[in-house]
Length: 285
Image (cartoon, rainbow, N blue to C red; front, side):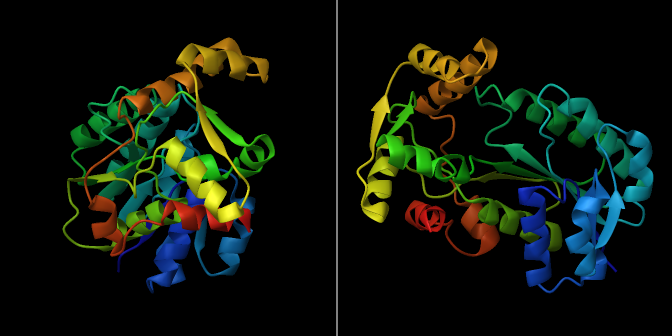
């Protein structure tokens, strides 16, 4: 019997991965939802999923969480600056528990990109490779929801403001990445594999055009410099460091940091990624 465990199971991606596993026919009793706060997974337990406490920052909770787990999906934590020790704790506990394979949600070209977010992912990948446990690296691109989640603001202001220039963004929806994770967890031939995952690429100018076409409200993309964008973000309430960090991501996008020419995502999920227009349509509805 194969048992599949998902960390961060009550987060948006974790829940979608569990949905995808159940949709593939994996028995709920073979799915372990690992959550820092198990009470938040009561709905999963009601569906027959096994719920266990597991906290990245409390290593003592991890051995019991990973007991009898065969394949583990380690969803990267959201505490920037603390993720490497947190992920290392999970990897070490998984190795001690005899987990057969660990899939990890990393970032596009983690070992070569200039994206500032990549450093902790690259470090985690090194820990994973050195652990001796077979692994699957799911190097996810941007979530389309990073943009569609701001649809109301775009429509209200009539513009998308950024510093990404003509940089192409091979984004995909959370559901797309969740389907890829489920396929990698349950399928064969994924040991020590590295997947660069991204959907149909678009520029922010193209995204603005798509929003206009889908909603009937004119939205344009206004490109500014990284420093100008940082200033706008500070005016909106972000502290200086965070504002420059966020604006710097757009600068990296302008230089191709979130594009990928490969088809790893579509090969894993057996279909193209969700088209941007469909994602916008879902957000608008």
